[in-house]
Length: 473
Image (cartoon, rainbow, N blue to C red; front, side, top):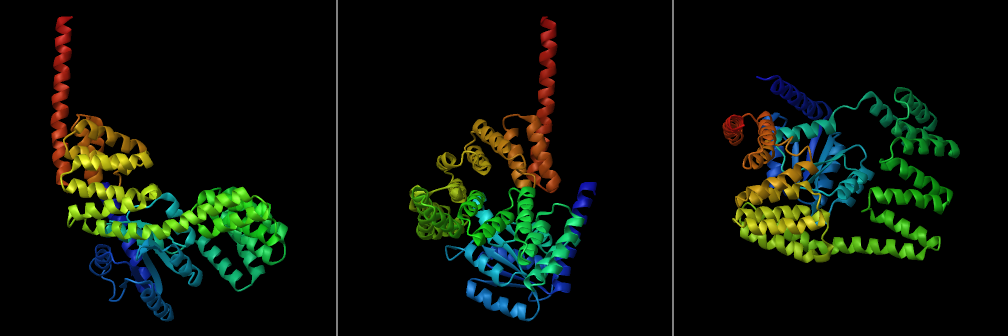
């Protein structure tokens, strides 16, 4: 066994140990709000077959109300819940539901389930209170790893911060300030420590000192939303609309789908007499709200199409096309998932040229989307247009240099695309990567063997050409 395989197995065993301890020692329970039978079966397989956890460790629900009822019982029994929540339930975003869970039950873990997700949607879910996102499909080993990273025992620093937050909740502000001081001794300029310091100082009436702490936290983490929220709230309490608006605008740039915040921005602009700007922002609110309403039909069609992709490609094409047509001018980067799935449905029917056209339409909206170029390459490969296949695979790996690093099938497909146009070095890199990820990948084994023969033939041809040139000279 290679050193790489040994390290991988050691890490996997450590992840498994972390998840077992979460369930056996902390009373951990997995609650899944999902109708995705493949994911739920994988979760059950990971829990019962792979980890041999106790019965009842996994429970799944199709509706929010059922989940909440079970969640109340879990908390009543002093169990520790980890909740898997689909990005949407009944074609409605679960962002507000996650916000509700986090506000009412702070001490829980939440993982959002999705296939692909645009950056702004990911930021919104994290802002609402999700710990992280899981991109489906996911293998059992990857699922266990994701759970382990979520539930692993906190570091000393994180434990201190959580203790400080609990003291704030209990209104023991002096004690919370002492904890904040300890945090900053362990890690100077810690944004979380500075925010805890600011919260405790503000609660003690030392508002100017609190403001200094919040500003320091923001300076230490420019892309972190929480310090900006603290500053916006501070100036809201001060009644300083101008300064509050500065931080709300910064937050809106980082997380542009938060409707409540946009409403605040619109109201403040109106209060300041900036009616043109207020109208612009309120129009954005209306568009976002209308988008949620209008995309209900599109979302249902998309879900049907995704369900049918591997069952009836022709019907899948029908519903996915309907989904995109329904949205018309409202199509955005967040719809790339639908374009990709439609492309797969078309390829499954042998319609590689239609798949290429579909991806080209998507690229007009998101020209720098690596997955679109990757899937277009696969479509060209289906049509044996290997030159264009390699061209788009080259673009995909340029846009996302990490593409294929965690999936042997993806890395094999990249290597195969380069093999067909005799790009030996690039092909070798990705085929070798595929076999490191999965030594049993027979396609990669066969392709690498062909690549070695090709490399030998090319080297011999080059040598013969050089000899011939020397003789002629």
